[in-house]
Image (cartoon, rainbow, N blue to C red; front, top):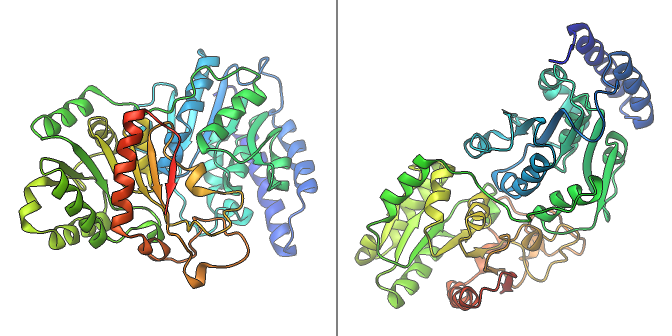
Length: 431
């Protein structure tokens, strides 16, 4: 572990705890004072000693501790880091839901998952109360460099408390943050752009090495491919993947309306097969409701794979599908990574000011033919003048998205088929 003594770790952690206790008592956080005290401590504990030239020649930490979709969109940047440093030790911190995908990643030596069991990722006090013990484990290895791909305060504090000498993260130009500027040695200023491109821009701007491959990817085992082949081989085409779940309830398009859409498609394409993908109690419930409202004559055209496949197995199945139809969720990004065209229902109303976090665009399916269907108008409680930076809709339930008519999605279905035929990979937005 690079000659790290327990006394070095204890020195860093005890100093951190004293600072936070005083700050919480005073109800203020002075970043200049924090850096002055902690940098002195890190230096005394040997974490600022040179261990080799360049960025991360020996030990590299990557923090990508957010949702599965975010993890997939960072895959290109992870691949580039390994390309640039083929002999480095690379450790990656992930969100537990990404474990199944990450454990097959060929570009990292170790994957560590970190749960978020607290309500506010952007509050320094929550980092102190919940993640100090996790940081202790990172301090056992003297990292030369840390890349933080999660644009959250707790991720940035974790980057700093990893002890890495060089700390690289990004800061959106339109939302400068003292936290990112202070805790990173290289806070890369990036204009709003697609999430995948934001991460790869770090490679371009900091390492001054043009990204050689701008694709995203997933990593599948032979068994994943075997499972998918056994499920797909006997099915009649076209095959459409249907994903009715999402982390946020506001992103759930009503299951009953999905049923209407499927009936429209099957009336036009009677040999089509629909595969329902997802996992968890909510997705199982959605699948049950879907079957209850679907006419019995269509039952043999729909297969329910909910809770039956891992993320990787779902990716392998999606690689055989003709289209992904569903909400903006992690499975959508997995579909894009395996080059499955996407028809997406968005909860971000078209008439809202999207601000800098234009979710339908920065989280669009990446480099595949795509049609995104948005509500034309925000419902009254969401129709505010000021920008809202979380999917536009402010509700904690299916809300603005419920206004989308199945007929509009059916139109998007035909538009996507046209775009597939023309190999147009720029997203098309309709409402």
